[in-house]
Length: 318
Ligand code: NDP
Image 1 (spheres, helix red, strand yellow):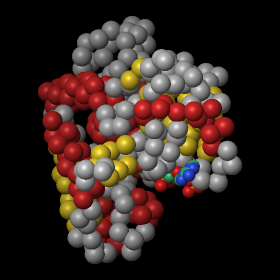
Image 2 (tube, protein in one colour):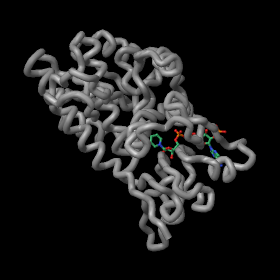
Image 3 (cartoon, protein in one colour):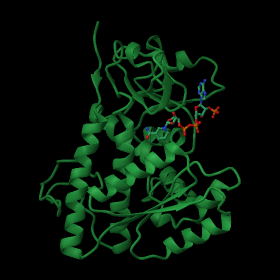
Image 4 (tube, helix red, strand yellow):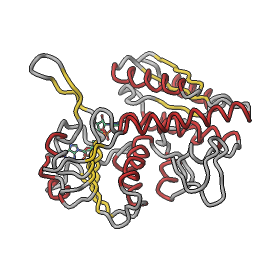
């Protein structure tokens, strides 16, 4: 029985954050600029509080100035939009993130539309969504961007591969499917109305699962040797009264069939936060008209060029 390669998102995210910290140091030392990230948290949702604390901690560790604005759950749309407008005009803030979900009385899309697209480090503003589809220079949503980076390590060239994206949400499924199209994959987007999901998975060289259903994707849905990216985060109760996190893929079954697979936790999750920091540094460079460190923005160095932050030469990539 073969065992899949474990795609270690935690280690890769750590390496990306370390490189970003170098870039942030260079921005400070050579340009006297400190990237600023504002995170807006509405209400007391325990999961959201943990995510925000984590983002704040990792931003600070990378040298990014991080400010968390915590608002009561009953805040009005007008109060929230007024805060965002203030952050839009704050020259020391280069990235704005509104932690989702918002309370039901708030129109989430309307609030996202209030964010200056140049500071929309989640990449959810329609301007950035449009840029993603037209291959412009917008900001790409963090989770799909993190998945793409993990996939590129396994498949430097994805041309012609079949990919099945399970899930079609605005924040994961749709942008991820679009990134896979841009990598020249032949992409199937599956969702709750898909007739034979197992069959759609079995034909895929790449399966990305973003559903929110614990261990739904079984081992016999996976084509032998396929790469599996598990975005799902689900907490399940155990018999001893404890709980643990699992993905949307039944890891124990899939690991025996797949060629490579992300674990949960330790796969996509850490990459999402690393990509938030990456987008913040990128947004800061663009707003301050500083040439970004090419490694920091994840580009491959072209011949003869040099990364100003880490002095690495051509053809290496982050
Ligand atoms: P959504 O609930 O917005 O979307 C879920 C998608 O799954 C929908 O498109 C839905 O289809 C589809 N779906 C639901 N049930 C089935 C089914 N039985 N068969 C096939 N498709 C189904 O979730 P998100 O995209 O926001 O998140 C998905 C998961 O990823 C969650 O577990 C979330 O916690 C996790 N997540 C993890 C992140 C990370 O950093 N690791 C970041 C973001 C999310 P339909 O459209 O028809 O309803």
